[in-house]
Structure formats: C-alpha cells, structure tokens
Length: 311
Image 1 (cartoon, rainbow, N blue to C red):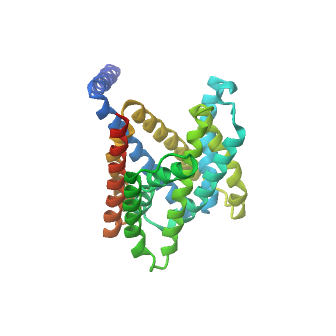
Image 2 (image 1 turned 60 degrees about the vertical axis):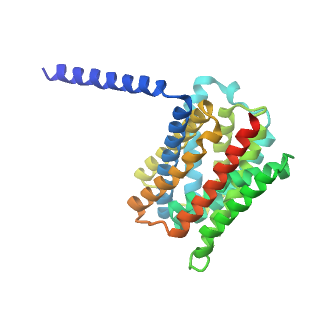
Image 3 (image 1 turned 135 degrees about the horizontal axis):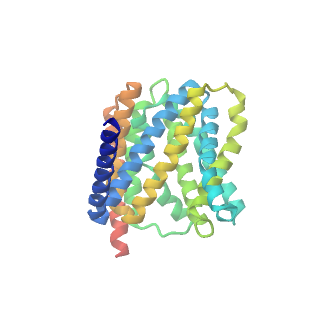
C-alpha cells in the first residue's frame, strides 16, 4: 500500500513538471529569455552570498583559490565525457591573458567582498556594461557615438551616488576597491569576446577556472587555514552554482536579445538586498538604491538605443 502511494506521488510530480515545462515552452521567446536571465541573477546572488560568508571565515585569497579550483573540478566530468579535443585551447596566450586580468579583478573583488554589503556589491557591478562599452571604443576601435557618452556619464554619476557617502566611513576605501574591480572585469569580458573567435565556450570557462586557480594559489597559501569538511562542501556548492548561473545566462541570451533582458538586472539588486538582510543583516542605504537605479536606467537606455540601430 505504502509503495503504491509513493509511486502515485512520483507519477504526479513527474506529470506536474512536464506540464510546467510545456507551459514554459509555450511562452513567447522574449519572456522565456527574461526568465532564464532572472534565474541566473538569483543563482549568482546565492553564490556571492556564500562566497562572502566563506571569505569572512577564511582568508579572502584562499576563498578565491578554492572557488575556482572547485569550478575547474566541476567541469572535469564534462572534459572526460567530451574529450580533450573539445577543450584544447587554440589561443593559449589569449587564455592566460584573460585569466591574469580576471585574477587581478578577483583580488580586488574578494578583498572588498567581506567588508561591504551584497546590495552595494551588486550596484557597483551594474557599471560593467558601461566599462565594456568604453573599453570596446578604446581597445577594439568601436565608434563611440553620443548616446554611449551620455550613458557613460549617467552611469558614472550613479557610481558617485553609491560610492560618495561611503568615502567618509572607516571602511569606505573598500568600496573604491570593489569599484576598481569593475573595469578589470570589463577588460576580461572584452578579451573573452576576442577569444570566442577561435575558442569554444567550454574551453574558455575551463581554462579560466584553471588559470585563475593557478594564479591565486600563491596568495591563498600566505594565510592558509585547513578548511573544515562543511567549508569544502560549501566551496563545491559555489562551483556548481557558478556553472549553473552561467548556463542560465547563456540560455537566456540565446533565446532573446540581450537588450530585452537588461531590465531584469534590477532584480539582482532585490535578490542581493534580500539575501544580504537574511544572511548578514545588511540593510541597503538610500544612496545605494538611488545610485543603482541611475546606473541601471543608463544601461537599459543604451541597450535599447543599440538594439534600435541594429534593426
């Protein structure tokens, strides 16, 4: 009797999941893309909250090393399944340049992460598209039209709203350190853009994890502490979360235009504020919310302008 109830319940769950899947696939493509991106933002926020907790328990550089070590280990089953040829780099020099720039950005990011709130971290992260746009003009030769200058100026003004009130605080310089990581992450993204001409996405992700872990090891060893069993599990979870978030983002961008998904980035601030309050008791300041809104509006505006120019 009990086994029959278990089987019936399992069949019910499978039927409901199948129904939800059919309902999801019936939605307009842009809605499905936006839902994938919203899910990726939530998963990234959960991962960042866990990394912040771990970096408050262990040395931040050790946390950086273990995060990317686990990220590389998570991909080993894929490497074994698809074979070395799929992940073999064609531009090894470019892979190492990307890994080095990303490692430097992470040094700043992990240094500041334990000292500032998740909402503030997310707000500063909104500047990424602005720095990518400026970098594309300076380093890739893309034309810098007036709309891009306007978006950059408004985005940077939003940064001042977020950062300004923090400068007088005792730990105010950590906000500047976090801000310093944003253009470096943008540079890493631009290098990635050039790598996609010759490298597969899987190869880029695998080699990023491997190179960042390798470059982070010396800093991680300076104040190394033996992680507990639960901390090892937590780092493994961050590796899975990072891969999952990148997968959701790729699915979303593959279904809908990137410009159509930009408005969903504001949800990242909501996720971060909620997670920061529940886990750390952080309450986002008014300046953080206002500044993040200004940065986000500038990003959405330029994304829509760029989209209209394409069609």
